[in-house]
Amino acid sequence: MDLFAFPPLAFLLDTAYQTLMGLSDLLAPLAGAASAALAIVIITLFVRAALIPAGIAQARSEQVRARLAPRLREIQKRFRKNPERMQREMMQLYRDENTSPLAGILPALIQAPIVGLIYAVFLRTTVAGHPNDLLSEHLFGVPLGTSFVHSLGQFSAETALVFGILLALMAAVAEVTRRAFHPPLPPDPDASPLASAGVQRALGFLPYLTLVLAAFVPLAAAIYLAVTVTWTLGQRWILRRIYPLE
Image (tube, rainbow, N blue to C red; front, side):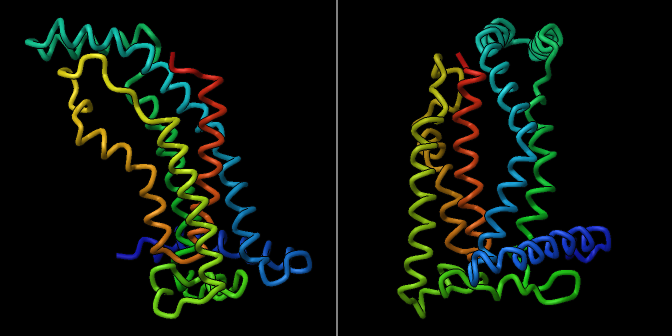
């Protein structure tokens, strides 16, 4: 089932597409053949800026969860044999602190449809019944509809340069993210499955998942992902200092 065949979603997708193409036309005198790629960068930055309030809400939620974590662990230890009492005590703690265990989920839910709509523009060959001309545009001779994996059979210097820069940037961002924001080990290793070596290795790999995805999606989507992860790293770095976890 194609969700974007549903008329309201098709209209929103076409509106996003037309906005991108219109911006590309405006940038053409300045950026020439790279105007579509520059339009993707600008639209991505605009979307991420519009979602700053959601990012702030998530940072506040992380700070509250970190502050309550010792008290929650104490409740879990104290009422381990009485799950119903444990749940009541935990919910009472959240109420006393005027927060909720779901406080960080709502901002993510708000972001998901907006990000998904923009991302869909870079993946679909047709939009609202007409060809997606964005994917036929080029960046330094590389079509925006070409993916790194599918270009391996006919690799060129231009393809190597464009994808090499994007993937190297994303790899650097992933490594900085892994080092700066890797979740700390629980103080009581026996109390949490997150302390296992296997889980810790998996968590360390998570920042690289976007890099892997970027190798398979069209160049237009890879540009979007590169800008997104770079922005996200900078935003998290700033917000972590405004809302420290300790």
